Length: 199
Image (cartoon, rainbow, N blue to C red; front, side):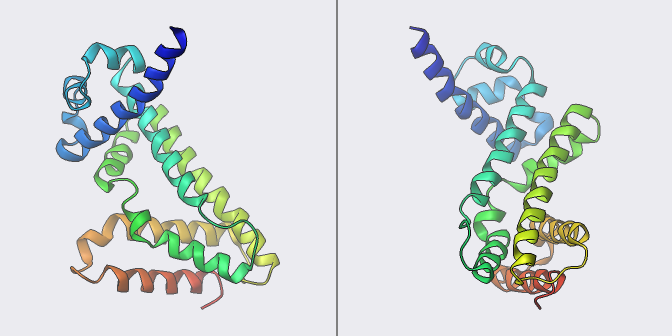
């Protein structure tokens, strides 16, 4: 009986978080009530309270899901192998449709705005970007030692790369014309290569 309940929770919690993501995407964070999320997930609102306690804790769980989504994308990169190929695959991943569509940008904007008012959420968002930064620094160290990139300040280069990627992700919808996404990605990869000293 206990195993069945645990399995049910393991199945339901991700489904509830997906419903939460969908409601935020459709109606904005402020309108994403527990009742609306429960309705979309097809469960009773009391179940959300049982699993998450509060809407704020549900937000934290969703941020953790976002972090895991990007971790799974990075896991697709090959371990070892030719460093030049690894660099190209990394840059291609960062400027791919898969990366851009991994998490709806309006949901991420909601998190970023909310984090300005909630310390615990700010800590989660900083952790997300912190892990991103650490990952890039690890890659830069490996690629630099292999001679695939040439950077004098890996920390500054990682920060520039994150800023370029995140700026591209969030704002390309406003300044990229329809049908030119692929060209935009090629331009961003070229800019990233310049940052990494392989332009």
